[in-house]
Length: 225
Length: 104
Image (cartoon, rainbow over all chains, first blue to last red; front, side):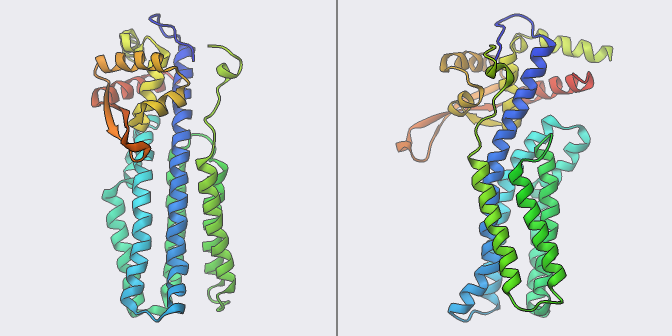
């Protein structure tokens, strides 16, 4: 990185410094998203497979089901709040005023009430319309995919990293496919495959994101200072 | 446009911004808000002494704050954390805004 000591910064130097800062921060964000993919993979596993696994070991009532569901989604919420704080901080600097206003949708003032509302809908569905629980769950996952995609667009200025495309793609595909199969297929097999593959994709995306090297820059590769 | 150029000229005349490395460090901190000095060194590729010089300069202008935090693991050895201040954020926002207006 060229440092000219005390002389004036050239427009080219300024442009390079800004570009480098943005790219380095995207590297940090990519790692933060990696943690988020892993946390949400765990949350999905608990909410989709956790209750059936525990039910097969011993009978559990509504209260335990609700408690497990809220624990799973609560863990996901905490991970999202942590990662989205970084996204908001980035968007504040790298995006225009309009985007900054939209980035408030990533804050706890919006997310926590939203989570409470979603949990309320899930609890009411479990208690009064248990046959619709799967439908509600899948719709929530579709909403989550859209929301995460929006946050990813705010995080990365150019194209989305490969692992982000895999994560969002697998979640969207599984949600839409499950919705389409809901009225046709009653056996759990296809759903286990779809969501098992999605969780594995998210774990892979998380590990991949966390292990990316720091980006290299043209002036470093050519040996220019 | 003239106003933007004047504003940018004023900002770049400040001693802090007479170094592209300090601009890099400040913009990086503005996005991340808080980074350890070790991570900052790894990201920027700067040597320990060079980074210290730049960070001390930014601190002398009140743009960043240096503190020591106890790290979990590493036997409780403290890590030096560098955090951007409100003044630093304002300076960075103004700089990025001017540059964006000029489509640099």
